View (cartoon, rainbow, N blue to C red):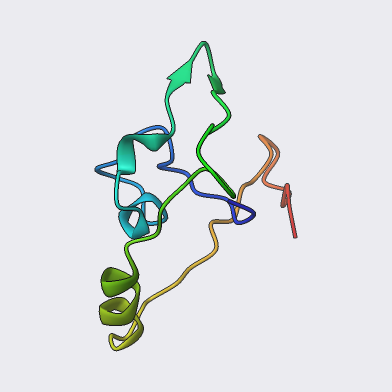
Length: 75
């Protein structure tokens, strides 16, 4: 996933993994994820789910991180 998904480590919390046929595709161990070994990108997208989600209003947001001094950490 190119976008940042703060819930990627937990399939039940991840917005991105909800689009996969098998959200358990990515297995984390020691802070790393194993490379999917299936054909292509190694994942299978639940196309029906994507079509349904495309019909809804999505409230996307970008979290803003701050340093301890209150300064913005990322733009």
